[in-house]
Image 1 (tube, rainbow, N blue to C red):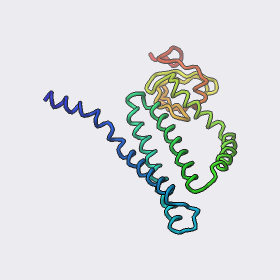
Image 2: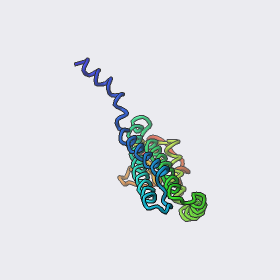
Image 3: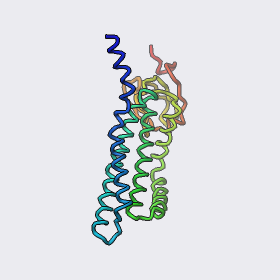
Image 4: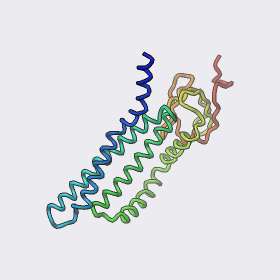
Length: 216
């Protein structure tokens, strides 16, 4: 029995690559679509067959590449969660997804013959306008990233968050740290969602404390 158990444990590291098999296959198929368009296709060609190959190859590349990006990001989330915790793993997945989507989009625009420089300039102007309109939301998102990296508290930990902008003092158990809110189960049984920007600027006391929220 001991030898059997050891043999199974020894095989576990060898099988750790299997969750990445389908993302790798999808990436290979996307690469084939990319090569197909580059060598045989042209969406702006006059020849119908060359134009069709260009459109089909581009569509194949976009669909399969996005699947590969999403699947890889989800596999990385599952792999990193036991090592670094859910917060850091989720942040890594989000960054990988954003980078992958941007790369796929830029490559697809190049295959379609769209000037990437004009798109980038237009995107920069649009980004500035959206940034001004969503300033508070972006502030909470950046504050959430800082909280996930700095980790002034962990999920499941008892904390006290003191800030005038949050309506005073909040004491309870941290249930989640997202990109916009920190979810806290307070002593009075209420669940509150505190904006990340306010939590980042607040005084944080880890563990039980004295005062009106002290437990008897």
